[in-house]
Image 1 (cartoon, rainbow, N blue to C red):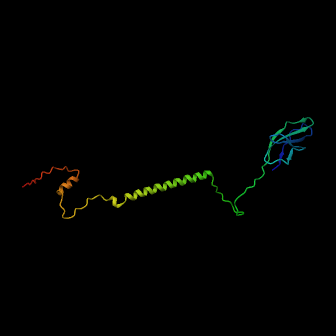
Image 2 (cartoon, one colour):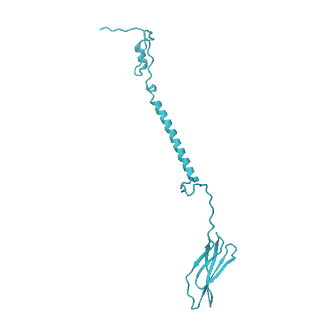
Image 3 (cartoon, rainbow, N blue to C red):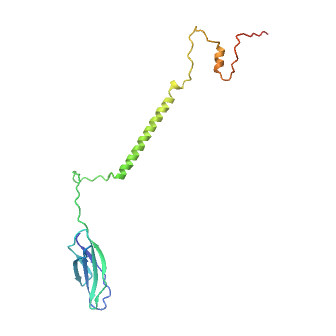
Length: 180
């Protein structure tokens, strides 16, 4: 937009006829751009540059002099920008989802956590399957002696050596026999 409008309420005129004036100054240079007068306090200022903040001084004038100006900052709108899109679908509705940098970080963190959770689950599953292996859970049994092989010692001494509650006695090689 290259214009603005102003409407004011009339104050006390002191019994004399009055007129109203608006002076529009350009921002930065304070150069006078427009000077309008009217018997009613309504103004429309045209032909301004878009995208600037103008300063408007509004005051009334009668036979006794001029009032203190009221200063108004009046912006004009920027011209609309052309937007180039890669959408060749005509009037198709656009997808409302946009991948922002914050969204990219969130997706990356969630994906990493999911990957770590999957790896932990796989390792735990592998360890549990090894503990449940029937070959590992069997107690170790010494291999059976084939029939007819000669024993290294008597059978009772082998079982005595393996039992921690039995204190082994020295073997004197004599057999004690008791008779009743």
